[in-house]
Length: 126
Image (cartoon, rainbow, N blue to C red; front, top):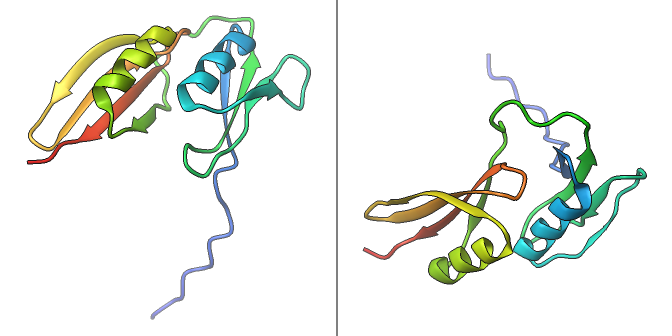
């Protein structure tokens, strides 16, 4: 039996991020991605609008409890200017956790100001 797969009718609209300080975390990610931060649809939330070149809308929700576990969603940022971006992200408040260099790829895992892991990746010429 050869069944036709149904058409895909969904796309990623936004990433919701729980945090202690939505304004501060939205400010960090707005600067990291070069997009403006704005109030979210709900009082207390902050948002960064979607951009085709740098990703979906990001919404930051205040939560009273501190994060108790490692985040399960990790953003991966791609760049052709690895050294410059590594320094810029650290200057914005990201903490470098470790760096990996392989023959074709190099990346650094960072923690954002609230401790969420993300990676900065570059592909290297052979």
